[in-house]
Length: 250
Image (cartoon, rainbow, N blue to C red; front, top):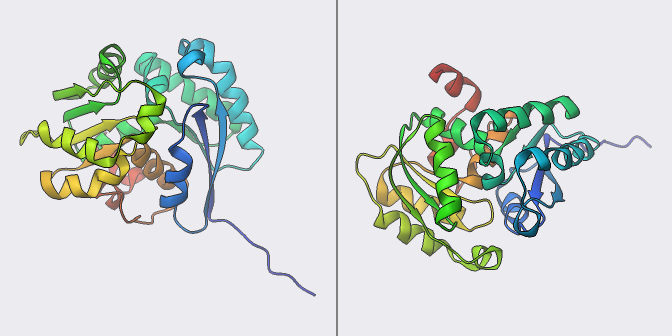
């Protein structure tokens, strides 16, 4: 008997913090049919938090393991970690992941800046889940990357447990409270919150693109893997081809 083989359209590997509870269910919800997400967890937040240089060997071990699953793209999906060393260090980490996997890589930070560039968004409203100190570190990365922050707010949630249980309405209300008609886009940071489910309602009210950490990573990794599907629920960003549009904006 001849059997028909079962093929996937693409495999995307995510390196996520051991504390993260949102990337997996959100990927299951939003990845197109035939695209298989794979996950490896490492310690990089809370009691595991360390400078990016110290985390890099752990990150590369995880990337090498994901490569065994034949992932087409590997994603370091933690916004705070990927932004923590600044723009040059983040680029170095991506190059190192690509070196050990032999395939394209990105991070939460690089997918976000690629999204802003693709959308032509220079002036941002920035919201994070963090307390002020960590919020300011992420804001410094955004500024270093060449973007203007017109308004921002550290929501200052208490930690991982609270990140995961706060509803999309929190992020909707916070963004609406910071409304700026001169903003090009709204950026809601963190891969461990439910902001992704507020994107379309916010875009309808604000009339501007809304970019979140997981949405940007899903979009960028799909496009890097050659998947051009427009995924319902992920807002204006999904209308774009990262490879053509971002390159044209350079």
